[in-house]
Image (cartoon, rainbow, N blue to C red):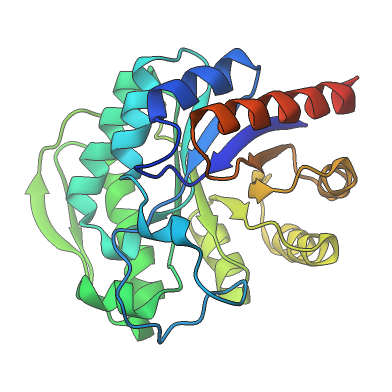
Length: 276
């Protein structure tokens, strides 16, 4: 089992440079950061975990800028969008941003994407929540085309551009790994359609097992599995490992610098005991 760190990087917490260095120095394998472009004042969309929406959602740094800063001061850890809300992003610009992070990092970018849950947020980007799944599919396909071919074009219902050149191309071939977030039958179909991995929230162990079984029953390839924001619980890690996860991103609560470093020390110690 490989262990990384998953977190919401805010403008009043540990900075990306200090965080990335600390993650790598403590032997973790990756850094995954969340995204929200903005949080509309309307609260039509219920927070998926229940209760009030935590304040950390309101202050997230852009994930590609954050990971580029992390790339500049590290040499080993994978850099993961966990997840990029691709339904709210221009695919041509996002393809360039992802490839740029991959180049800066020497091939360490991992593209986690999802359809999102905040309906007001996506509407502000011109996205119809009713068709966000189809939009996500086309944007994933278009980005992969931009990463792997030159010139390339894409003609879909929601994404449409003529023959074009785009550089840089990613370092990793054929392209950075793509992981899709979600917990639904549609998510399973989308993972298989794009030959992607699954980036799961920290679901209960029985739900993880049920989804993994569903994925394996329908996929003709070895689907990579990871978790964003897993709890600091070795029993949970073992349950995830038993059903096939070989990587988890441990939740780093969103805290100031000194508190974050102490938590990272504690997590590294727990991981060391688990591995030993």
